[in-house]
Length: 184
Image (cartoon, rainbow, N blue to C red; front, side, top):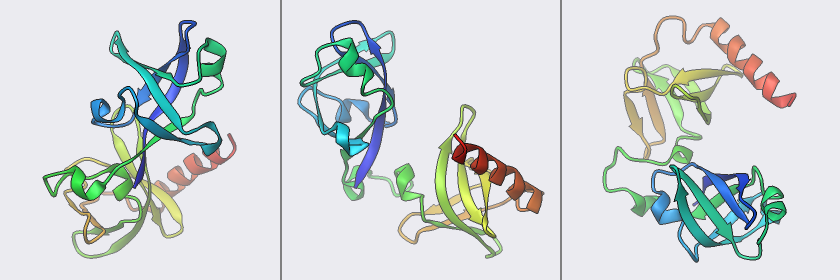
């Protein structure tokens, strides 16, 4: 499965290195000299890593064929993607990739179907599940107290929604978020 593992940020210095916004729990397995990463949009890649270094807690990458700051600036905001065998990735059945959550059916503990996960939104405080609920998007905090059960093989997520989470007003707030992102 092709997974997003990073986003290219600003250029660093004048020799063609880029700051990297890491989106993987295993950067040492994804970013190494010689690694070839696909890109999104695909027209920018694939990219071969020629240098990797840590600069004050920020990963800096260099890429084959890019030797200056202006070359890196053209790649800003490009997503880096790696081929990952998600079946062999984890030893524990409670481990999973975020992308595996997309398309899972969310239900309450009483069995009421809420809807399908459309996205996982990474917010500063916590991640939230964006779920299609009655034709509108609602945001469900991705915390154990609300999302106690995830069964990736069965493609099911069980939630214990707090009062008000499944009200129509919650869906209206989330649909406003969706409208704002479409207008950008």
